[in-house]
Image (cartoon, rainbow, N blue to C red):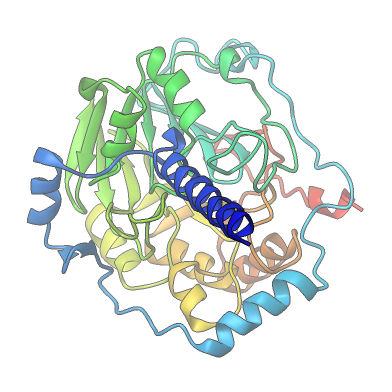
Length: 381
């Protein structure tokens, strides 16, 4: 009996050690990112948006009801939505962006504005003779792990190694479908500069990104790259990448203001009056890049993840001439059919008289050219 007790004790101790070791390993997993500390923490604490130890939205978050949680679980395991495309999504593959045409990305002119949707919220923007990426994610999984987690429906239309030099990257917040460690590290090695909301620089520090390549901004703060003004603007969302960093870093939308063209990117957000404030202060915009997908049931979800109808309304509020719908068609992250966001966005845009561009992944968008509507998602059956 004594021997059995000793074996049982050692078994329990071993299990505890395994659990503790696994927890320590996960907590220190590199892709989880870093911790806000030192001078960065001082700047974070000085922000008027950092309240009681965490960042806060301007509108109070509705309480998460028990019924909502139960509803999420039911939908997750028993929902009948077609959350993944039944066949391959058409992708306009780009072997090299510079080879698209002699004028694209060569002899860049401030009088030109071009964009390419790379999937999900990743967008290539060419403006003021500069090349930028918005929330670039080139990894197969939107996850801290390279081999599992939400998996892409399609490959990026261009490989990282085939990109031309990218002058700057805009990051809206630290979630895995917007901030991708391998992508960031690769672009950093090529000299790309990163514009991020307050606190997000701690993750880049952890990944070895040189400090001189990072600019952290609070809402309404701005910086420049050459003659392009980059403004960190509000959003209504949240942040978290590890176990203990909920709302420890800021989230944002972004404005690119050139001498001739202006672009707005919503980031992940719910609908609020911040769109009108941005439009009044910094608009109008030639292109609004608006998230339309990954919404769910319940006020708590919609509060921080607007649906397609609100996205179209937001595009009007910021005074954007045309709207590029993003944050759909690449990852299964919510409880709706994979093509529900674009169907609803098309309908809402028609009803609200918003000019919607619906490119295939990898197609070039030139905002001042005539619209060429393409309902390519109807081919995916």
